[in-house]
Structures are given as C-alpha cells and as structure tokens.
Length: 161
Image (cartoon, rainbow, N blue to C red):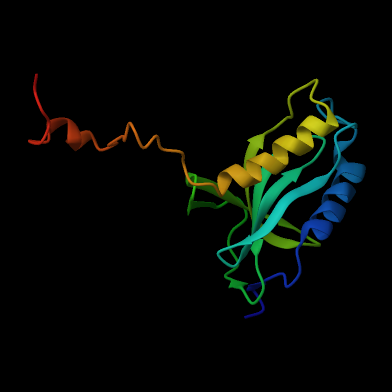
C-alpha cells in the first residue's frame, strides 16, 4: 500500500501553485519561451467524480490536470504512461505526471509553449474556461440532430429522394 497515491482531502490549487512556482523559479525562467508576465495559477479546480480536476497555467504551458480526491487511493503508475478518460466533452488522453512535493497526477497539455502576446488576464481566462469546457456536455442543436454513426448512412430508415 505504500506505493499507492493518496487523495487530497483539500483543494490542491495552492499546493499546485507552490510546486509550479518553485519549478518556474528553479528550472524554467531562463528558457526562451518562458513568459514571466503569465502567473502560475491552478484554475477551476473542483471535484469531478471524486477527483480534483482543473487547469494548470504557468509561464510556459497550459494543461488540464487531475489529482486523486478525498478518500481516493490511486495505484501508482509509470510516469509518462497514458490514460484515456471519458470526460463530458469527450475522450481525452492524459499522461501520468509526478512532482516530488505533490505526488502523481494526470496531465493533458493544451498549449505548450503559450501563445506569444497573450496577456496575463487572457491566459487566466483561457485556463479557467478550458477547465469548465472540459467538464461541459457537447452542444447539440436540437433542431438538427446528428447521427455520428457511419452505419447510419446505410440505414434502411434513410429516405431517398
């Protein structure tokens, strides 16, 4: 059991921000794509199906992140391994990631490096909206339902004009 990853009882936003601020200060600040005006921010962190879900914004990237939630016990996985998850927005592939101070989590890069010229306010808004959109149901126009099945093209119910 010592290899298992324990869940975070409290919202891990502050923990993530502290960890990634340290990474920024120690390792990333001198890289050419580092944008110092962009804050380190965990955006939209909320419980989803018992796990902490949100977006991690740093001066070099934007990613979706999932961490074990209260009372959760994740089996330790190989860092770099991929996990496909079904979210309300659709299937999303995450990568097992890990920090010494925060343990294992799942991440999905949305933008790396960040787009040049983006303001801090735009970046925070993008991160917050990305977290919300990932947990949103896809929009469907009720007046024009879509049958995404390829077999529907050959359905006997299809009318021929």
